Length: 223
Image 1: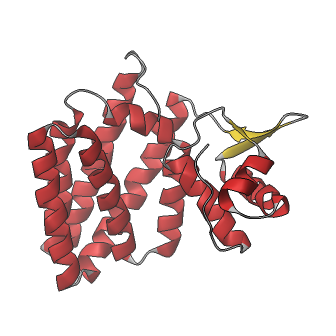
Image 2: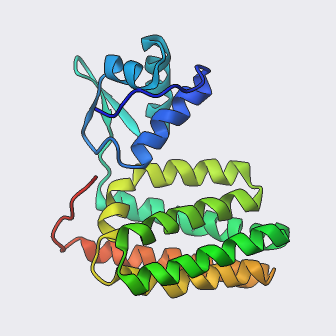
């Protein structure tokens, strides 16, 4: 079990900590979420954990099984595709908003991410590219200033995390998604809202097509 770590004990912070552990793949689909273990890991009371699991159940990340406690909810491929279709619209909005708000410092940051992504693909560093991918999507969301949209995206990505990880591990996938990510970055850095939105929707549409293709593919390991 991961080492315990201190976090703020407020209800929202407990929910966020457990949500991030699920989104990052620390807890895999169908894995039991034991209140005492979570309490120890996050250094909070079992009551705080219980309340957090109830909220995460409402978000669709956790399900409670009668007489068996809580577990990470497994999401089918069909549902993952539906989730990603919603993401396509919301992430397009965020990219457009980010293009209208981006600062010079943020432009420099995005260009740095751009260079790192290109280098990762050239080096065949799949995990590094995956981390940069997550960082890019998170920063675009933050730069957009769309808190409500950001919350929706975070929950949706969490629900489909198993399928996202399988997709990230597909041979050749980074080379396909790289130019799509670069187009998003270029649209935002050029402050072209229409181009940024178009690029984001095209990228997520490509993810949907790739997810459909995983239906007949061998399973990849889930961290």
